[in-house]
Amino acid sequence: MKYTTLLRSVLLAGGLALAAVTTPAAASGPALEFDRIHNECVQVPGLEFGPGREWAHCLLEHVAFVVTVSQKDGLHDFYATRYCLGNKAGVCERKAQVLFANRAYRAEATVAHVDSTDGQNEFLDPVAVISPDASQLLVLSTRSQGKVERRFYTWQARRWVPIDAGKWVADYARQLPAGQRIVQADAPVPVTLVSTVTVSVPGQQKQTREVQLEMSGGELRVAASRGQL
Image (cartoon, rainbow, N blue to C red; front, side, top):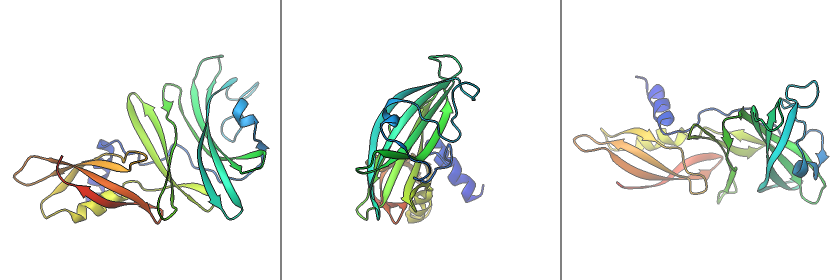
């Protein structure tokens, strides 16, 4: 088995998402009234609702502040909103999560990111982590049939850009002594950025270790490893 194929299998076994649900949008475009995102569903590209549209009904289920990002033109606050869409009132056939950006002290908002999923799935609250070098990490999560899929983004060029959250696994594998290999690597836990890794050791039982990651230069990197658990 090629190493890239093995690495993909390791990540999937650990529940690490390898692809985003949708493509992120830049924090730009037509400005909306800021108050609207807190009180109603807002039409955004790809999520159309109302008479004659893909979905007849839309219900705003949740609104929450996520993070503030500092840009040259000032501070931008991000809010996550969750929508329930369907063709019957009160029935969620499709769920959506829309991130809006609001430049501080302005009563307007723009679309920054859109995700959607089947109605039986559930979006979890986004988690933002700011690293010592000021890199921004955003973790978006979806729960489906008890399993959580996490998607990782960093803020670059005024947009949330997906990052390869499994790149560090190959770097960690190269640090292991000869003969040892990774058999499973869990997705890092939001906020703490700790991953549980299972390692095969010749002549011994498999070892479980905690790998501390850090956001640096727009990537997740190995900061430390804490022995056998």
